[in-house]
Image (cartoon, rainbow, N blue to C red; front, side):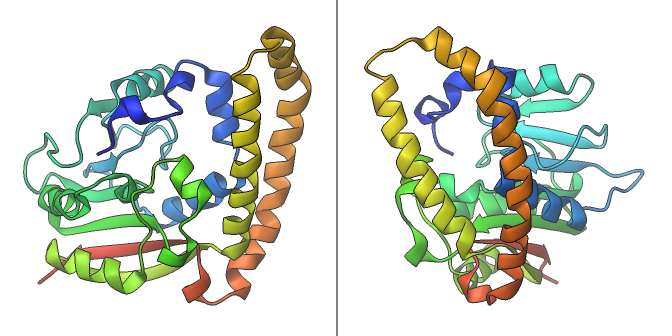
Length: 257
């Protein structure tokens, strides 16, 4: 998995305000909704979320074990989810016994891992024989652009390519769902372009205190409302366009018989 030191959001891990902004993003909301719709909590079974970071797909639940390579992210998440289980772990070497979890969730993680096949094999190993893997990933290689580079994606995937990787890991796709469409991709490219410009300007100095106060009192509430409202056109967009144009796809996978 990518070294936490290379994560450009690491500086925000201790600031709950920035975490709340990140978690109010329209694409995060829609992805979380899609994942939760697929997850069925079983009374006597455990669920593992791989690469949860500060923005897990699953809400606070004693049945869920949250794991991530970044100790800083998990420490902050633990503070916000007091009572949950959090384990610092590399996706390439999960510190759990074989066939421990009924459900494994991995959302927007594989594209950050150089050896993604080994990570999938580890997830298959810790899954129960009748377990389920719920996986979301950035779709279409042709979509790779500034927003992918900004968050250190190694790649985007074609659906057929992901199906082959899952087979090599001992898994097979049982369900495919479109999560986000081309409108989301266009939006993020534009947003990241302007964010990059702003970061360069801030790096030269400025009245940080005043800017911070303005952000919390004025800009943040508007940001949250706009993202909530923007969920609707993005939700409609993904239903209008075909699956081959989807920017994010969710697959449910089972172990090969």
